[in-house]
Image (cartoon, rainbow, N blue to C red):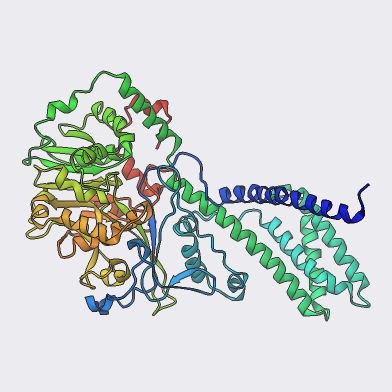
Amino acid sequence: MKTPAAAAPSSLSSRRRWRGPAVAVLALVVCSLLVPLAFLFGRFPAGYVTDERLQQEINFRSFGRLEGVKESPEDVKGKNTVQTSGNPQNRTNDDSGNAVVSTSVPQVLPTPQFAIPKSVPVLSTSNEDKGSRKKAAKGFNSDDSEKSCQLEFGSYCLWSIEHREVMQDSIVKRLKDQLFVARAYYPSIAKLHGQETLSRELKQNIQEHERVLSEAILDADLPPFIGDKIKRMDQIIARAKSCTVDCNNVDKKLRQILDMAEDEAHFHMKQSAFLHHLGVQTMPKSLHCLFMKLTVEHFKSLPIVSEHLHSLKFDTPDYRHYIIFSRNVLAASVVINSTVMSSEVSGNMVFHVLTDAQNYYAMKLWFARSSYKEAAIRVLDYEKIVLETLRNVDVWQLHVSEEFRITIRNIDQPGAKMRVEYLAVFGHSHFLLPEIFKKLKRVVILDDDVIVQQDLSSLWNINLGEKVNGAVRFCGVRLGQLRRYLGNNVYDAKSCAWMSGLNIVDFEKWRELNITGRYMHLLQQFNSRNEVSLRASALPISLLIFQNLIYPLDDRWTISGLGYHYGINEDLVTNAVSLHYNGNMKPWLELGIPEYKNHWKKFLTRENQFMDECNVHL
């Protein structure tokens, strides 16, 4: 028989044996709770993820001192560059806990990576403290609320303001407001001597309101005598307010209700913002179906010979060559169709559509079975070409034009409205074009979110002189504001940024100045370690390489902002040479701006049988 002294160590060892499994079970329980929450807030999105360009965010703290900006190489020596270039950046935290740049320069919020073809933008998960949210209750004006919304939720706020619905069921809302106020006063009234009748009536009306609201969620569900209940509750609340009560208790109760309401509103806004971003970054099911059917049909069909009919045109520099990067067959088709339909002569037009291996066969079949007057169209697998002919290039994946969402605030004028713009620049694939098309001398590069409304013949007649890239300038941002992004490179601080979308490029001058070699050097300098930093580095590389090499096109050549800006004049849109749907509300998405989608849909080809089979109705 064991003695108690001998049994004690046995019991202790038994508890130690169970400690490990207990910790493991606890960890599993915690994970089971966190994984659904992470999915809810967008950490692991589901569905068909679009392969369109992804916007990254830049936050400008000032745009009021642009004219006086001065910068020299000595001013930027020793300064850290942003994570875009692979180096850390000095940052501080504001009162709400959100990271901001310590000086009046932009901030890039790179998009995280996921194990899917393209990542969905993840909303900022840094919650504001309750003190910052209470500013709304202390007279915080709507402009400040709009600014904070845009800083936290990005482009969703622009969309939500435009699509704000008129409040319905106002009577139900009034009943709830009365119930909140009555509950706040009831504990204090119940403690007062001589107010038993008022306390009883207040409690009775609270119960009646609760019973009504438990049965009705719409004004139509309310009983016909609800007006009398509202009037009676107003009278009782007025009597309660006339009593001498401890205001601290009432104030505490009302603040608790306010905090709960704000927390709930903030939670629902987060959900709505995530769903909005998921909607603009996710490929519609109908388009996914179209791509799949086109790919399958390509392998079932006989070999395509249409391209061979125009094989002599593809490398002849005497024709007018247009280059398009795209993974979206409908978008590329609309760009080509709009350019051809707006042109007086199409026999001298040659289009080169560069796509990736995943979309190559769908693109090839689509354009082989579609006709665009007399224009010649060739579809190329960009990744295959780079791997086979440019073996010394590290970046062989297809990179379309990159877009950066820019928020501009004027710290000198706090009351001024915040401006939001989308800046589109060349992706990494653009810098290899002269090596792919060695025989071409001059080309027009079109983004796949552009449509052409007028003949581009006069664009080909522009004399670029010593410049390389003809582009529309974007002087809302100057290089001096991007000094932390540009590193220790020499640049003109007053120089404007420029936009991709519609560009005419001189390949001869490009080769003469060795632009591709300079690109390879800058790519190594910015030391992009992963896909996120690689894509973000497209901004400084594009701006630095073409500094002093941009031929400024007149603004009439293109109107941009049709993918996010609701206030563009209709006459400007109608009379513009081309329209650029930069932003995340692309015209082929359900969330596209309806007023501008009509211009895009005019050039959409609808005769394809697979569009009906996949229910593609844009």
